[in-house]
Length: 459
Image (tube, rainbow, N blue to C red; front, side):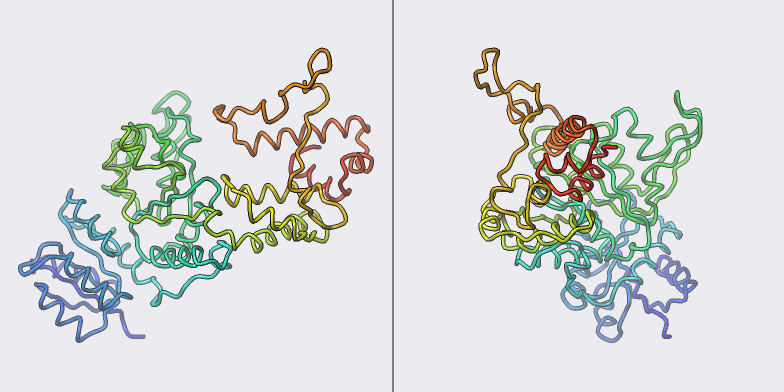
């Protein structure tokens, strides 16, 4: 096989010589240019697998070359070389399509890792399918989303994934990871809102034994675990301000320091982040640092709400029902035309996750293998003893809906699941754990009951 060719552009001969020596040790052929014009000439004469360019050149800038390469040679990754601490110019290059960046003075190990990652990129930007991404739908909105994923997967730039709750932001993050050059590395998702603030630094960066009370042994942090792969920061807006400072430094310097350690450790991690909140508003309100916002939001991917691709609802519904039926060991039910019309007209503030939950509930309630509109509208009644009547028997408003407090921090899915668990447990006890009688009492099949017991963890 012919060795890969790499074009190095820098006006300092010593820097070019260092690049040439380092890359030739990797079995690569290196061409050198000292200015923009020489580089453009070489690009017309040879086909390169990678281009490395300094940001400041005698007759132009590296940004000009990034734009030129994106326009003329879009399949070729280009990385920029920038001065230490000057990450603003590097971020601007990433926004214009640069693959990655390295800083002077050069760290040769990091340079080698970046070059090897770039050479593993696919040579084409073929559109991704539903099967490849897990993002179901043939609508224009979903086609655009999959196309954007294919584009950003080729870069090492941080990606901010915005979208409403339940729209599929983690699926998008996994697709970006799986279709990029880091796919063989780890994908580490972390919910930033689920980590206690006092443990965040240890969780992200690790700690040394004895560094604080309870640190009985050394522990790797999430950055170290994700080394060579992708770290997905879900609900990043929930990070406290002090942790935002530390995260910004880790991203900019590409190095971390464990709690209780005096040594910096280099890490090679791509950062993907997401939140359902308006991060721009969080910045304006002083809840999120502006410098971190610009650092993680180099490329933004917007995930459409289900309301923006309603035409995909029949395909999604079929997928979920087949999944439920497979787990229950039964033939999947069909959806009546009136029920499908109801599904298409719903507002779905919870997006695809809400559609899945709606269908799962209808799946357990339907009879004769058909989901009707009545199954979609059916609601659990409160267990006996939960007062929906007053002392004199008069009707009150204290049913499950009125008991739910949206500001309590309890997700609505968890609340409804708990109600369902209570109802099934009560009916099981009333029937002395006779599952056949319980299923008949609930109006569902025995297999459907068995599926619900497994899902709800009822022994």
